[in-house]
Image (cartoon, rainbow over all chains, first blue to last red; front, side):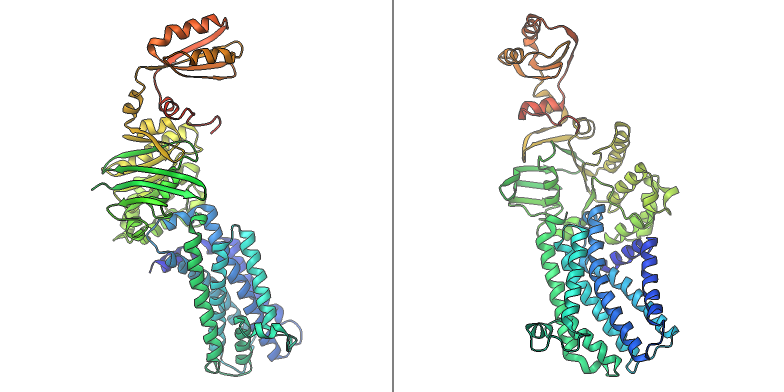
Length: 242
Length: 311
């Protein structure tokens, strides 16, 4: 309950920030509109929108959860909340839920825009939505680790962007097997972004979500491990955060 | 059972001992001041009481519970007012208070929020964003948030630091309001006049240790027959004069600062001091005598000033 209470109020706090709200709406709208300018095949259009949406969600999820915690540290509200009766895990969940809701709204806007532009995909829309939201969860779990380790917004955002970019590059989703036979190919097999982009492409080609249980299982393991590590790091770092 | 019981508390940060073998208790209805300069260990003690830091050794009990083991229960029983107005600026005053009330699981929290808004005279601002409030209103909201849980113990961490004298007086009124109804208040401060005016008991801290404790009157009476004489000269008093004064058996200390000289002495030594100053042939612009302040008590125990110039 308490993570929900915290998320509800912090979400309000963010939405009231006019620039934040503008960003939340303008980014998905502008992005889908741009993808639909000019003559592009329907399948390519859908793939671009889905994958780039995921790429954005990964970066924004990672950075915004980190900057939320940093903002709380700067304003002193972090210490105020930590002195309230909420567990450390509850606090991290609350922050993650708030960011999840924000990104969920952005993904929702992308979907509405896709319907407006009558974009069709061979697979299920619901499956695509679910896998994108799982991708957001992964981004948040990763971002929480940066949030508790970093000392400034710059280092949080910097490390979140760097890691997201590297994971995306190593996922090889658009490089047509460039890494085949190299050490990166071995690494890519353990990269959750590699699995997630594979699942997204699979759904866009018409495969059902149920076909991807092993990949999604691996992603969920990563999410759980990253969340647990953020809780452990938070316990270890809390004295430096206040 | 004491509300807070601290036994031989020590906290180290690497080689630095921030809190060194500190023991004290806080009883119901007391207003206790932790008075000491910056870096004395006051905030570390508070962080340990609320469970944000763990002691290196020693034990802390709040309502009989150890914060390091029962953090949630302990924090539920404490109201906290931080130094900085820690508020969500894009939430309204009412929403800030509701967030706190819901987190403390206060039954009929909306009713409690209305009560607190009224108590801290924030009715007109209840629907306004906290970021739009004036400095004084933000401070009232900060205090109001601390009193939301209606706990028996309220902790104030340097609540008036950086305020001008008139704002500080206003904040003192808020502190007294929190203390109403027999609640215990633990106040950290490095302003001696604040501790003197507000607290029923003061713990004087320096370099992690409690150097003296008692009511303001008790502390001052430890130097009861002491007097502070301050001279302002036309020129800087020589070091030799300070040395001659401190060599007197009943002079506790002599400090010179540019053109002034402050001598802390037992009253019976006054004629000797006056004689030595007279012999120095310095032109006296003004002189004053005053009784003991908490700063004098602090200097007596530590040999240092409570606050450096400009703090």
